Image (cartoon, rainbow, N blue to C red; front, side, top):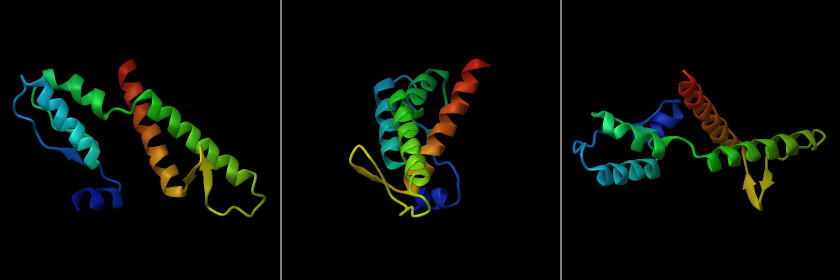
Length: 120
């Protein structure tokens, strides 16, 4: 319920602490579980945990490329519909709706913020 409430209100959901900062495999497993459940990140208590959390929660190059393609597909469907857009597009045989486009735009915004942080 917490994740649904956060999403409905445009908030991030951060997973709790993994206390054994010397056990990288356990942290990785918890991060993957959190990402699968819809978490946006993980609360960290030690610098050793940062790399793992960033690798898991940052959008991958594949995710970024898919988001770009999805948005382009949506935009093309809207612009070529001549005012008769049905609210559905198709990318690689899979139906795309506005909720997917919103998620893709959020993913790209997060990827852009991460890229900006790397250049500072």
